[in-house]
Amino acid sequence: SHTIDIAPGEDVSLRMQSSTPPVPSLLYRNSVTKDTFVRKITEFTRHFIDFEALHAILDEVANNKPNSNAQFLQRLDAEWNVYQRFVESEATKITLLPVEKYVMLDVLKFNQFVCINQRSLQDLIRKYDSLSLQGNLCAIWDWKMNWKPQKMVFSLIKKISHLYREEERENMAQPRTPSNKIDEFSFDRKSVKYFVKRSNLIQVVGIIIQHLPIFVFGEKDGRESHVVSQNVSSVYFDSDDFKCYHERVGKEEGARVFRIRWYGDKEPVDAKSTVFMERKIHHQSWLNAGPSMKERFTLKSGKVCGFLNGSLNIPEDQQSKRKKLMREIYGFVRELKMRPRTRTVCDRISFQLPHNNDLRISLDLNLKFVKERPEVFAARNTMWFSPLEMLCADDVAEFAFDVLEIKLAGAFSDNPPQWVQDMMSSALLCECHKFSKYGQSVHEFYADSVSIVPKWIENVDVLRAAFEKKQAAKNVHVSATTNARDVKITIHAPERRERVAERRPRQSCLEGSILKPMMGDCVCHCPKNPGGGRRKFKPVNPKVHFSSERTFLQWFKAAIFIGSSGLSVNALVPDQPAGLMMVSVAGVIVLWSMVVYYIR
Image (cartoon, rainbow, N blue to C red; front, side, top):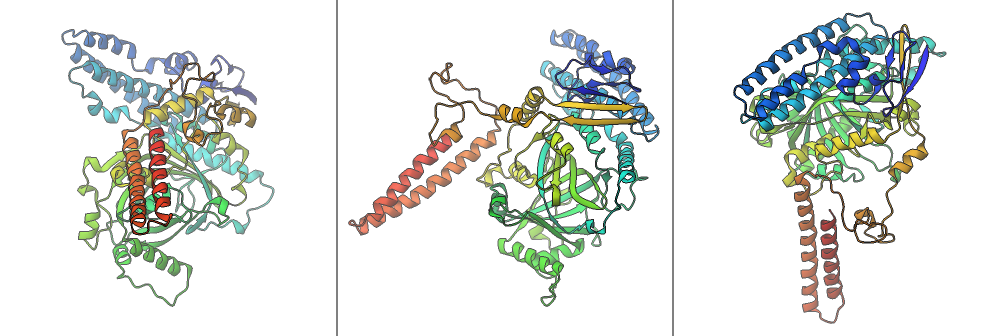
């Protein structure tokens, strides 16, 4: 075997010529251009969509040449049909290859080929809509622009992941211990979430499967199964004032969330369908209150409404863990008068050992948010979620990224494996600080009803720019070791000192000021800022501004209440300083809220 170190910023001519099969460095890079790809992977050269010819016709469209629109659409449709047939046949060919580790090279080549074509196709169609008077091709070609044929090879990737697992099991010196039995109803763990660009998906999966096999919940032996992902749906409940949302997003100690989850594509309309009643409790690490917990119990779908409205009998004399949890969740729901608010739907690929979940990684694909209709729950005693036929287009929102969650427990809580640390610090992932699918869904549909903006809420273009900036700035190396029957992909993260230096903020002339944590870089005329007052702002979601206004009004209302109370006290008892103190406090609150609002 041979080893080569590959960095995202290196010249692609650096490749392994003496290995069998060859491993071009561009297969492990975050993004590759078409010209670079065809120079190194010659077998795909003839099968690219002819974007040069399409752009030439698009120039005629821009010049309003007669029949140019029809020529463009006709040529685009013909090119797509050829491309689609080739991709489907190539995917079928890959799935018929022997289940060997080196087949991941073919999967990576196929993935890069598809990503380049899909990315170029999206740019081409958007440009056509901006030039043409028709301007609706994006809507017509939506499924083609977002086509993901890589899913066709996921079953093969699953089988390859089990090859790594079998090899590891053969190399284990000690047998499996029964103490690692998984508890599927109570979880205490630490989790970190990342956004994953869809073009980086196969690379991330290729790294994970070398250490953790693909795990499908409920499968006894998944080596021969073609099932790779599971559809996961979760209906979240909250009060009318979104108390759970505010506690969750604010990361308050003891913040609780209640949801009902089911697995599978079908909605649990059958009364005998099994669903999971789940409660999540957040604990602050610095309070030593223990790890955050997720607890759940199973219930038949037909009994959910009875449980929520109190008609389901829960014996008081039984002190089992399940009965205790049922009583606590019921009290929680009745106390806040909770109703269904939102639903999250995704295709989840799980990676974990079948006998141990101290290290578990989940990858949520095709994440969607659904707005539940509380009036349905109030009008019907037998319906606790909104059927799809009752939803309209505005009730469903798609998320722009896939979400990777790394869940650590036991010995891995404070010391994850080195390969996990390398992947977490690599340019393939972008950390989304304290991301919550429920928080995102509430902000998607109820932004005008909440007063707190989640920290991760940013414009999608800003997140994409952050990805590009990260992969350009990070000095991340990928080591590819190969022989005739094996492929080893490893990320070598830079030294911690370099990462800290990259994140160190520039000095500000607000040194020592209480406003420095919020103001950040210097914005005034001073020697540290020769440009004087010019600052580059990033585009922000307009909802953020409205939320900032609502926050300011909340503080302003509190100041008015305190100030008016102080004036009343001063009128009744002029000799007491309490009234003046309250008026002073109100003035400070008004000034502080104005400063914070201006900064935000």
